Length: 483
Image (cartoon, rainbow, N blue to C red):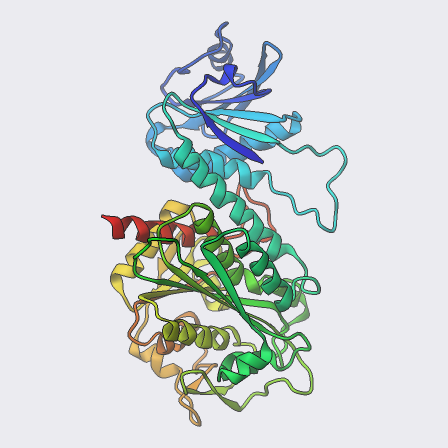
């Protein structure tokens, strides 16, 4: 979808469909020449309640009037929701060009919300199941305001497009999105940006580097693993280096701790953290953000063959830590452990990892929040603030020495299955905490939000969650370094 900002009035943009919002206790700022919108409100056919929608026509164009509720309650998330509702109605009307009139006296976050909600709502995954012939897609979105809003419009359009690409990756089945295919995709993406480079390690190189934890997860699959390293170094940027670490288990059978059949079908979504890292860095490159970022994505399957890692095996991670593999289905933390150590060796000032890691975080936070754990309060607050701005909220959960004690093994330094079987999200975070060392670090457990996150602007497939959060984090660190 082509997205652009305009200072022309909606009627002057040439759009075939226009969206105008109405706040409670306020009139329509720019009514149609015949006063049709106020007449719709007066008649009761339209309303100012949030997401109440009515349609009229003027001079051969459709005009959608949507209620925005109370101005004091109209947040960026409400803008995304309203935009999603309006987009669906415009699609039903077979609109080609949609123009949103941005309400008066709102901030850039509302502009971004309108753009994001429209672009995300227009997403369809049609690689294997073409859309019905009668289904229509928008070609262009125009956002109209009295002042120049081109900067927030472009920013939101880039981030939403990146999120939609992450949704494509998540929705692609594991027979097509193998670790090799994901690495090839990242390489092709990097070729579009001069400041972005990709290095890929194959299984032999992973083993030769001493990444025993990562290699142990991969050894049960006929698909060779890949470690994908993305380096974004824009010219002249001298900011502290941020490391983004993503888990990309392209299919997780559970290994020799095989998962129940009913839940295994969704295990293609176990690579959502890696997709978020790849697409967030691509978005930063497209925005030419002046921030230095190192991305490390561990891509592998967790499968079963005669060489699969066994319960009770002891392996050695890249930093020399020995790990008892008590549960082959607790594989994500082992992949992340070696990726985090690699990032530390390459030099970074902060580490943020993101993964669909534990069922424990779903039990605690459902699909409302992702969990965040951190050894550094300022970094945790920064992640929380960026998550709030992105509309991808996180809730901080605790680290504690008692959770760390649960990760101790009788036979090795660590175990990947803690006892007792409580506090699992926190004990998994403490396992990763070990590999962060003294570097400021935050862990985002997105197990509850990677898919099936229904919103007015999202379907129940892969959500692309985390792309906007991680990109916001990069943009925030860039702006703070310039201050």
